[in-house]
Amino acid sequence: MNVEFKEYKVWDTPVRIFHWINFTAVISLIFVGMVMLFKKELGISSVDAKIALKEVHIIIGYIFVLNLTIRVIWGFIGNKYAKWSYIFPGKGFLNEVRRYKASIKSGEPQQFIGHNPLGRLAISFIIFLLVILAMSGLIRAGTDVYYPPFGSSVLEYIVEPGVNPETIIPYNSAGTNEQKVKELKTFKGPFGKIHLYSAYTLMFIILLHIFFVVRTEIREGGGLISAMFTGKKILNRKPADIDLK
Image 1 (cartoon, rainbow, N blue to C red):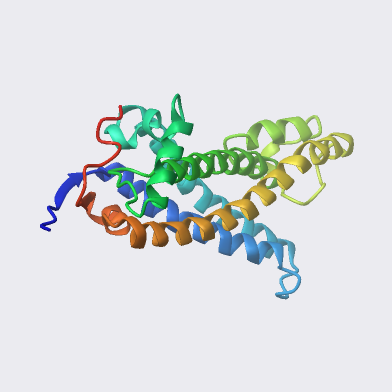
Image 2 (cartoon, helix red, strand yellow):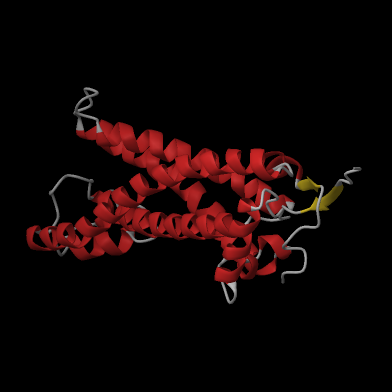
């Protein structure tokens, strides 16, 4: 039996750029974050080193946030498979999952130009985690070392009257109001925990994501991995999502 392969355009250039910048930024943030988390075990004890690590983490974080912001915008104006209306589960999603699972059991799994239904669900959750990490990270950047966009407002809140906010040094109480610093610590504490546990969750999801991408590549074919470089998939059956809007 002759098998006819057909090439489909799927991931446009902005999506592919986002993916690899996001991958690089997240891995870098995880590495620096782990160094920060285990700094005592690594023999890092000085305040200056602690601040420097946070600053490196924040600078990479800015790249991560900017990249994510562009991707969020592109989700409204990009091609069909880049749009949130395609990615996020909507009406009829459960039926799509049932059909997909049934096709797997039949031995002829559905092929998709974009992600299969379970892949779309995973991507939705990953985006949700990335947004939480971005928001909590920006808040901690402003409350820990007074970086934008919230740092100037934080400094104005904790500084003693008559003291120039620009003279305030992170992790140094000189020139700050003791009561307001305590209030700031109470405020920022939950965001630190949210950021940390969201990062742990993301690390776990990344491992699952890699596993299922490889498994899908083997089971369904189509070049899911190579498509993130070329933007194209090559399928031998009619894609199940070709008519989806």
